[in-house]
Image 1 (cartoon, one colour):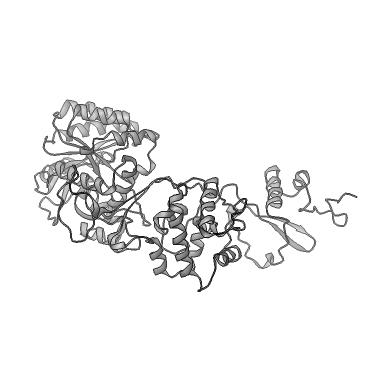
Image 2 (cartoon, rainbow, N blue to C red):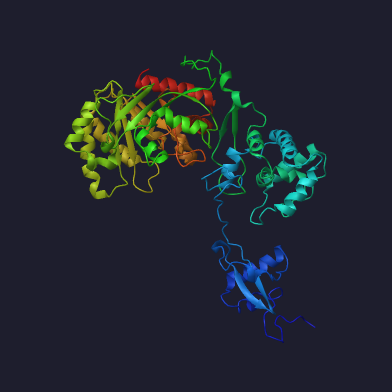
Length: 550
């Protein structure tokens, strides 16, 4: 006799046996939810009673879409996983991360460099050695690999929302051969069925939660000596998708740059052994407001750098910042005409196109005075920004043209060019800017196109009209599409600059950047240029000094 799906005693649906049509008779259960209940039964097994549910708080996580149905005298709770996995917001290692993409954060800031790709067998031996070291710190002496597997399966099981992909299979197969264990036909996370699966980043993260903070930090640098740290280049392709394979990693020792290289530059000496860099564009006033909101005035560039070097989120690629351009583009924040600025820093003064309405006659006179200051090395940032209402574009253009008349060929112009929402490349606004500048500026005008995100044709157009154009690149390259990468590669090496645009484009665990993170920016850019990171930092230092003076 067939099993009845409905109890004759109380006419309640048996949820572990009912098909879709019967399940949809439950309150608030439609076709989609019924399908998920069936999928859950197939994947996990029968749904069990939870007699403790009554004692729990009535508040439930909205992301889990819980539904309750009554069966017999107990409360039966059916947990229906969301179709979209909730993003991780907090690092379980309690490092203060603000990164909403946990995978990217963990791989970039807690794992050694050999774990930053999964598709190259050459890395697997190093990964296995790092794993063995980590297990020796996380577990008692004598704990086996299988013991670590059993601990995760019992105490820190990986969520069913995550799985392995075919690239992991190749990695794990190689690891099994190194470990001397037989590989299963299929590697799984639920449960973990092989010690090789411990190389998966979520397993490593689970093991790290057992470690002391010093061991966590030492694991990050496994295989490297931190004082003479290797420069790491991490391509941003560590997306939120769990199934994305890793990407190219380039590793180079900064202090091994060939001094006979044709592009070698005699940089200022440093006793730290770190590469020297020049941050071509950052905002001291805006960054100070972010870091010290209650007391933003009076801070120095050295303080910005110190906060990053000694804070909880240090740069992945430490550098020695030997110079940079402090940008004042908000008229209300102009420094005094006789301001003092110690150190190797230069200043650019201008009016950001979104602040054009604040550029009064008094502010114009103030800007004129600042341009005579010996520390002011550029006029900017100025330009066009189409994110304001179209009705204001003409007024913005008139102000831009007016300010251009204050320029001098030997004084670089720092240009801010942004198209309207949805215009990734900004080609139209760039064309409009070039048309205005051809009427006002001389061909030999020095130009710094700030935060370049454009196409290769835009690069060619700039250099055709104004051969002394340089292009500043930020950590925004992490979001470049193929067309923008081609635009980046079209920039002549002697016209390339590096910028943090601090406080924007943060690369660490804090929601801001500072000039101390320029090495991280260089690492991202170097990936797309097929150049060593230290060579890139060296040549952009030379380019910056060519444009802004030594």
